[in-house]
Image 1 (cartoon, rainbow, N blue to C red):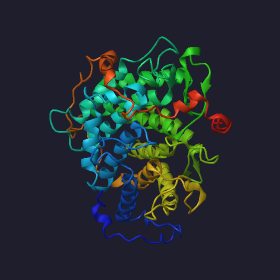
Image 2 (tube, rainbow, N blue to C red):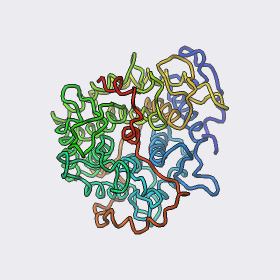
Image 3 (spheres, helix red, strand yellow):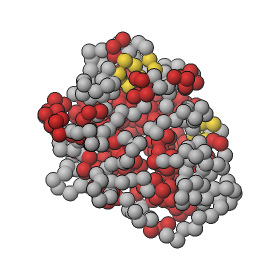
Amino acid sequence: MRLPSFLYSATVCILAGHFASAAIELNLDDEGSIKKAAGRAAWDMMQYYTGNETGDVPGNLPDPYYWWECGAMFGSLINYWYYTGDTSYNDNVREGLIHQAGEDFDFMPINQSKTLGNDDQGFWGMAAMTAAETGFTDPPAPTPGWLALVQAVFNGQKTRWDPSSCGGGLRWQIFPFNTGYNYKNSISNGCFFNLASRLALYTGNETYAEEASKVWEWMWNVNYIKHDTYSIIDGAHNTDNCTEMDANTWTYNSGVMLMGAAAMYNHTNGSAIWKERVDGLIGAGKKFFIDDIMYEGCEPINKCNVDQRSFKAYYARWLAATAELVPHTHDNIIKELRTSATAAVGTCTSGETGTACGLRWTEGPVNDGSLGVGEQMAVMEIVQSNLVDSAPGWRSAVAGTGTSQGDVNAGAGLTDDEHLPNMSRVTTADRVGAGILTALVLTGVLGGSYSMLASN
């Protein structure tokens, strides 16, 4: 792993004027300082990545990280390049995305079939969507362009819309033999909504906008989006027609819907309905901040699992995108990003490097001992998001700036059943994927955290 070029000369020093104990310097009024801080967090994060090692698999993180989180990490690293201009990790990202696109170029690789969720596939699709929007170099032939890979994910998920229960929605799991197939969760539907909205914005194709509206209306009608607060609950089982809900709320559920709504607001030239929805989600997100510092609901009770420790990364990413797409939200979001970034780097005082970051940013300049990919990714995203105003702006076919090659019919002729004949090739030695938080819901692990997390 090579250190980003501008970090070779960087000195680990005291954060003057902010947290006296911080080991990463951050001056939010200096773009160079922001880039160095983001680069330090990125470098510490990539020490966990093994997909570039001989004998390992590109696009793979070791235990205890599941397949989806590596796709999410690559999305963050594309953002890192977009904001900072540093190309240090671009080859790793490109290689991993291409490898994990799978045999049919739809992010359904055979060795993930045993536990492949719509949310897992969606996170890899959103990474590819970010690549198209930012002008990340397209894969070489014969791999389709980033846009075509996203369209393949969209086309596959569109066929899984299930009106047989709960009035519609996507199930959590793709294949019926997987645990969780009878659960319809907000993050799976949110990823589909997010992709549809961004595809509408990028291509101008109203088919995508119609699908995005359909998902929003379903989540609203089934009461996954609370009408009084715009809080988004985790999901429900279709076996009781989605009547008994898990009411826990998480930053990434709110964020995935917020960015999609922001894309639709921009796509519709600021329509009143999408303004109302964006504003509602912004208001609902206030509960994820204490004194303008972002936190996850599981943090106060010290119950965050490996997946949940990364959720703030995506919320930060999607908030910054919203500030760019919906101008009237900008000042409020930037204020929270700045305050959160300052607090976040205050936790980066641990590990072998002395700059590894912690989880709980609200506790002052101290590392809480929680270290890992999610913690690093969250700090990297919250810091680099402060560069959103100087970023070059999203590309799109509509604006004539999009260069990624698309295929509106990508993946359209392939059914999920056609992925199954190769299931015999999957062995217990294969790296399996995993659905995100929902696995815990299904096994009741959330237990005592429920009342606190569901209170909003």
